[in-house]
Amino acid sequence: MSVLAAAVFNLNHPAHTVDWEFIHLSVANVVVIGLMLIVFLLAILLPFPGAARRAATRRGERS
Amino acid sequence: MSATSPPAAPSSKSWTVRTRERAVAALPPEKLLPDGQPTYVASWIYVFGVASIAALVVIVASGSILALKGPAWWHYTGIGHFFNSIHMWGVELFFFVMVVHLWGKFWMAAWRGGRTRVWITGAITFLVAVPTALTGYVSQQNFDAQWIATQAKDGLNAVGVGAFFNVTNFGQMYSWHVLLLPMAVIALVAAHVLLVRRHGVVPPFSIDDRKAALASSSAAGASSTTAPPNGSPAPPTSTETPPPGSPPPTSTGIGS
Image (tube, rainbow over all chains, first blue to last red; front, side, top):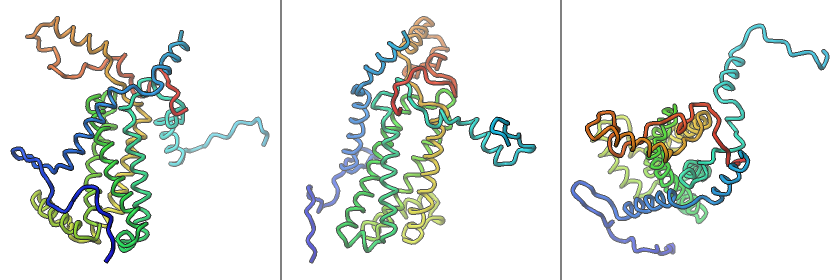
C-alpha cells in the first residue's frame, strides 16, 4: 500500500458550495475569485517600483 | 563587383519579396523589438499580460514532458507527480493572471485607438483556453477525469455539440489537448502580441480628459442627449489615445 501525503485541508468530503438563487459555486472557486479581485485592486493601487523616478528622469530630459 | 556599387534592383518582385516588404511595413523592427515602453506602462496592472505568457511557457514545457513520458509516469512516479502538479498549477496561474489582465484591459477600454483586433484576439484566446483546459482535465486517466467527462458530456449535449466531441473518448480528447487546441492558443497569443507591438500598449484614461468630459456633460444639463451615460468612459481624444503606429510619448526604458 502506497503512502500518500496528507493534504493540508481535509478533502475527504463533498465540496462545500455557495448557493444563491441559480448561482452555485464551490467555496474553492469563490476563494479564487476573491483572490483575483484582491490582486486586481492591489495592481491598481500599489505604486510600481521606480515609476516616479523614471517619470522624473524623463521630465528632466525634456526640460 | 566593386564594394561601392549599389545592389541591383529586382526586375520582378517575387512573393517572398512582397511578403517581406509588407511585413516590414506593417511591423518595422524598431516596433517589433522596441528599446523602451511608454511611461504609463510602469504600473502593476500592465504586468499581467506578460505574466500570462510566462505561465503559458511553463504549461507548454511541462505538458511536453508529460506527453513524452505518458500516463503511467505521471501517475506512478514521484517526478511524474511533480510535473503533473507543475502543469496543473501552471494552468491555474495562467487563468488567474489572464482574468486579471482581462479585467484591467476591459476597464481601460483597451480596444481604443484602432486596437479592435488586439482586443478580439485576446478574447478569443481566453475562449479557446477554456476547452484546452477541459480536455486536459478529461485526459488525466483517473476517476477524476471520468467524473468530469460524464459531467461535461451532459453539458455539451445540452448545448447541442455533443455529436462533435466525445469527452469520454481519451484518444480524441488527448489529441485535442496536446496538439490542436494548444496550437490554436499559441497562434492566437502570437498574433495578439504582434498586434500589441504594432499598435502600442493602450494608454490609461487621462484624468484631465475625464474631468473635461464630466464638466461638459454638467454644462449641457441633465436633459442633454449628447452627454455620455453615467459611468461611461470618456471619449478618446488625440492627447489620450495616440493614433495607431504613432511613437509613445515618453519612454521608461523598460525593456532596454
